[in-house]
Image (tube, rainbow, N blue to C red; front, side):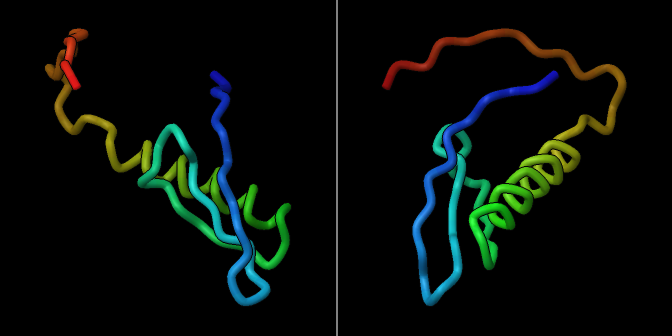
Length: 67
């Protein structure tokens, strides 16, 4: 299922560097903006793979956090 995110990016020594605003722990870089977009997608997919539950009995429920 496709999800939409906001790519925040900047240049650093001729490289495009960026992160996903909604998932700030996902960073990447690329020689071009197109490379950065491809790399940030890969970084997000890898992050999701690492978060897959290892147990079949894992459950979830919504909670509220006051900030």
